[in-house]
Length: 398
Image (cartoon, rainbow, N blue to C red; front, top):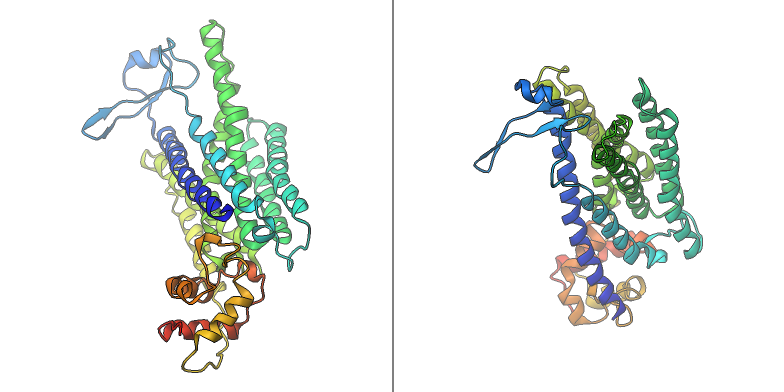
């Protein structure tokens, strides 16, 4: 029953996480587009009021005219919308999902004895430390260099080095699947912490100063802008890290840390292309195609480099019996998919269960090779070949 309830919790939290993440990423992408597409207001009255940019847009049958005041509007509106619950909800649902899967069953998900044989409490502590320590180091870098001239380039270079070190270290400590997801969680934690500790507090100080009739310190807007820009470049690497758990050929690669770094770099380069493309349309910068080219070339290079070696041909009989496959399931899979523990509500301990889940068994054991998890039970190539032949022979259970 515990496994069944955990599966439901995993499903519902994953659903919620995707929904709120779409809301957060969507609003983030929109405001990056908005900032990059603003032009000087044509209306002299708007300029006199302190408006620094405007854009006209059409959507859903109506016309929209957003106007930006870089420091302060001429008058505080009666209702001011704040964008923060999208961020907080994404992090809270993501952490809850991380808790009910990876932290709840560290021996299954976090620990690969072939990588690092340590105790579940130690693995859990190290995983949580990744989230906290990265944020502290990243925040310290941003604080040290501030927002002055040349600061963004220095901060960006140091943060890139920090991310690379984190990716290498995660892949030396955790199971590959967990290492990739942990890197995504680490970056996403920094993104949400940016909103919680810097962007929203800075905006609240600006609003408080305006209501009190005091001059507004522009540094709050500069800091918020810097952290917001960082967030937009983290987005595509985070999305890859979160999706990678479905593709074992990435995190099971012998140099999985390098695969992770290059994929994240490709994502950041492609994101840079889209950010600068808005400015290109207004003649503010050259066409950013080199960034897209770098991202695409990195992806193509990875496809060529990661091409798997030919799988050794394993001689198997033309017909494989249920008894042969059942013996493999008993030794390699029943401990997680039997009467005692029905992980993912899948059982492989009876003819009826094998018939019902034959397609899933073939996909997970033979095609994607994701099971057994981290190959913890040591299934052999010969055994995978027998499972494949059994399925291709019609999955007999008699």
